[in-house]
Length: 345
Image 1 (cartoon, rainbow, N blue to C red):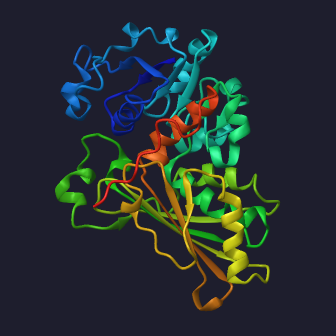
Image 2 (cartoon, rainbow, N blue to C red; image 1 turned 90 degrees about the vertical axis):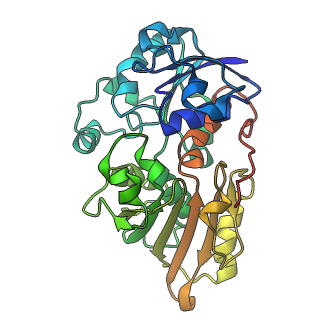
């Protein structure tokens, strides 16, 4: 049994962590912080947790986070790096769901997130928390930079192709869509029901901060220079993510061999489902679960492979992946607390 703290428990990723950890057999929730909601019972804000979580929110200075074994940061960028040195000194492991420990290059971080990095010396030991590609390093880590939701779909959708060196890595296109919960729980005009409902739009077309993260990680899978054209879209649903990825084949593979690349790569992965060739995965097939589903297409049997990837942006795209990392870090079965069946309809 480990003691767990959550910094920033009022947002969507925070409550998703609470939902998953509340029934985790190896976890004791120690503290959940919120300066604004200090003293409010968590179940008053999130009635779904009634009977599951008896804690109240506490201000950060009251939380005694140094008494935890691991602390999750479900906070805006910049919060985790300010508190991580003290936690590490106390022997506490850190899993950050924001971007503080995702990028190794501080100049790139500062360009995209518009803030200085306060502990660049710790970046060298931080581990990128994508278990399917980085499991061994995660097991020994003290600091995890949890991947972004879009980058998770792009990396798992492209990894088998890049590792086998069968596509042109310099011309990859990723056309990605996310539900509005990906923007977080905040008062913002673009996220209002009247604005987001019955509407569809692209954003970040000239450049999105998940691009450098994705390119950095994809570069570890291939000797080629990675060129990624990534366009995110906002769709009028609460949760869910669908990425359509296009890559040009450079090797003469038939469809059976192409499918085998993915099936072999993920045959032992509990949270990656490679569907039959030509299938059309739906976002609702992963809703509220830690499952990610992949399907391959090859239009007109040409030289373009199309990879369809779906996941729940709040679970495999965020909180569920973070719990997956925690399980590895503490020697638990990786699937513990994460075997929820997707919710349909």
